[in-house]
Length: 115
Figure 1 (tube, rainbow, N blue to C red):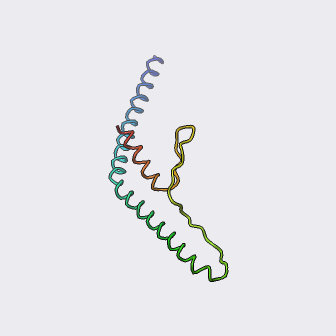
Figure 2: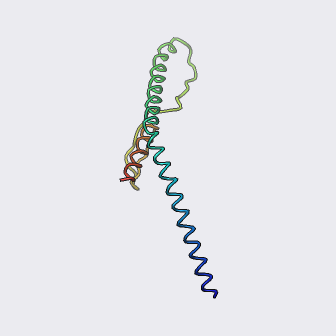
Figure 3: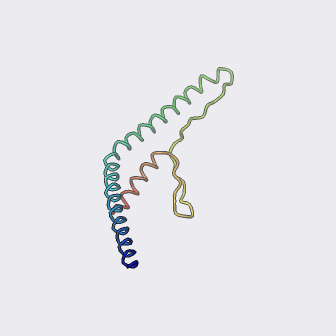
C-alpha cells in the first residue's frame, strides 16, 4: 500500500515537472522570437551610439587645440571606449570590450544554438 502511494506521488511529481518544462520551453521560444525581431533595432541603436562616441572624441580632439591656449584644466576621460575584442582565453571564451561586439556576439550565439 505504501509503495503504491509512493509510486503515485513520484508519478505526479514527474508529470508536474514535465508540464513545467513545457511551459518554460514555450516562454523561452517566445522570448527568443521577440529578441530576433528586435535585432535590427538593437543593431541600429548600437551603431548610432558608436557614431556619437566617435563624434564626442572628434569634438574633444578639436577642443584640445583651444585648450592649449588656456591654463591647464582637469581632463575628463570618456565613459565609453571603442569596441575591441581580445584574443580568446584558455577556456575558449573571448573577452568583449564594447557593446557592439557584445550585441553582435549575442545574436550570433542565438543563431548557432538554433541551428
